[in-house]
Length: 147
Image (cartoon, rainbow, N blue to C red):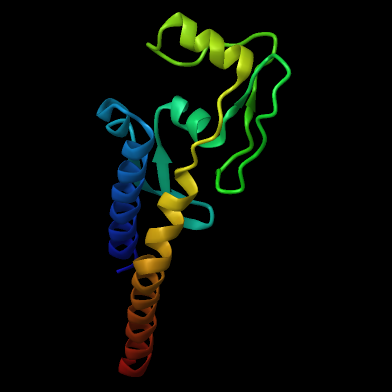
């Protein structure tokens, strides 16, 4: 019951994340990298999400190596990244000039991760989990009286 509710919630979050990401990115190749799965943790089942690392830079922004004013955005999932001495130049297959500009000047945040999770959870997710939990409790009570 709970696994089914988590799967439905995961699908809602995935659709939301892909939709919001497509508004941020001009290519659909990135949205295909967004994946989700239900995993078992010490605290119970959880939704695990993965995507291209460039998405996190887009969501939270990047402080460049020069003097700039890229600050944290309250709608971003993480704080802006910061270049250090040893780094892999971000930007994937962006032209070298664009990657160098990001390195020097930074990248303003374009948040989408937090909203892609909060919106589906608030609109349908809480109800899905509540209903699954109620079914588990009802079954447990029913089994207690059968004994």
